[in-house]
Amino acid sequence: MTAGEIGTTAASEGAPESKGSEHRADPPDRRGFAHDVCIVGTGRVGLPLGLSLVEAGLRTVGVDLDPQVRDAVNDGRMPFHEPGYDELVARREFTITDDSSVVSQAAAIVITVGTPLHNHVETDLSQIRKVLEQMRPHLRPNQLLCLRSTVAPGTTRFVHRWLERNTGLRIGQDFYLAFCPERIAEGKAYTELHTLPQIVGTTDPRSRELATSLFSVLAPEILPTDYVTAELVKLFNNILRYVHFALANQFAIVADTFGANIHETRRLANYKYPRSFLAAPGFTAGTCLRKDFGMINEWSPYPDMLLSAWKVNEYMPAFLVDHLLRRTEVFDRKVAILGFSFKAETDDLRDSLGPKLYRYVQRQLPTRIRVSDHHLPDPIPEASVEYPRNHSLAEALEDAEIVFIATNHAEYGPALKELAETNPEAWIVDLWNVGEADEIFYQAKTVRK
Ligand SMILES: NC(=O)c1ccc[n+]([C@@H]2O[C@H](COP(=O)([O-])OP(=O)(O)OC[C@H]3O[C@@H](n4cnc5c(N)ncnc54)[C@H](O)[C@@H]3O)[C@@H](O)[C@H]2O)c1
Image (tube, rainbow, N blue to C red; front, top):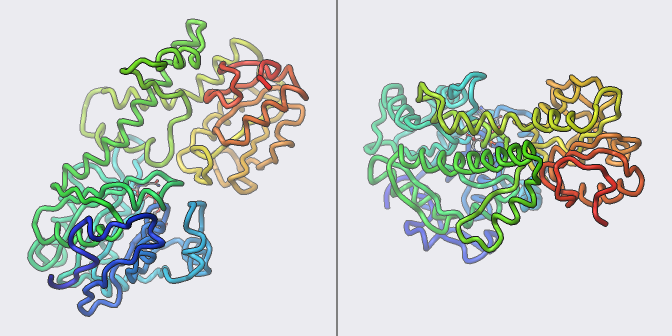
């Protein structure tokens, strides 16, 4: 073991037997660094990771440009909902600064900033480039840098070459670099950081050894590989889900076009048939799924399966409005939209299809649209729909003539059953079947008690 080593060497040695709360890492070899790890970008990925590393016994610090994130965490509060972390953040053992010079005091640096797409299909590397510029004067020999944001193939090589050109440090000789993708699902970070195998992409043995040592503190298994393979594993995991859901959505459109019921069709297709695993239809978006396909698609000049999947998933709000109009009018009616976050039981609005649905409904000139999502604040912070008010569920449903379920939060099933009593003629648009009516478009009176 030499400079900057963190945690243990063998993945299995560092893996917790159960949840991290019982696990303490072996004492790290700190070699003159005040911190074991510095997380740069402490958002939905970086903050849970930082807190879990602290819980595992590593001295971990964060850097973030967002004062709201810093203030909340430094005050002992989570800036967003992520189960399992409220008590950990309240201990205030993980603090966040806006001063990038802190990276010079860390044996390992983990980059977890955002990697969106530009408006057209092109990876936006600006946050990664900015972080590299910020850190450049503070990088020191023998540090390990782990890139953890989801990136297009070739990005770790870009970082490798950028570092060597701009710092004079040599990867594998006096500085170490690894791509260590995050594969958690939001809402499951606390568990999945301890249960998912960790992919570690490197080009030299020392970087692999150091990154393995770091992530063994949390992950039950380390899977070493090269940069591009590691980048593709992460993208393939996400894109597979995105394309699978697109197919489920396309089948829903096809079923409705032929007057069939997708929920029944799906149930029969999956029932005791060993080669069928058709997903339920739904709004497929969110900050990862909606953009990760572009990191591969941008390298192809042709329309491909990934672009088609994007088209299908992006069409779903229009499908709901368009196929409702085949049954009833929206013009001059009172509309409720239940759910606005990108998926169930989260307060994350980024890249949700809810606002898109809102805008399509608006085009039909209803008398009013009331949005309700108890996971989000009031007003809803979404500029593209002119900051709609966030109504209570009861307010949104009051006299509603049309109800769209835009996110399948658990509360909506019982609410629709109640609506069947209070407003039986109301039309419900329910892609996820939360009302268990086994239809996408139906009137409240058909909801089963
Ligand atoms: N959210 C998820 O569930 C998830 C899961 C797996 C992978 N990812 C990937 O992880 C990456 C981060 O996603 P996220 O959801 O955590 O994003 P996020 O926007 O929640 O967090 C990014 C953080 O980085 C900060 N930041 C941006 N530029 C900075 C800079 N120059 N210096 C310091 N801080 C800076 C932002 O203020 C923000 O707090 C993305 O590449 C994403 O695709 C996300």
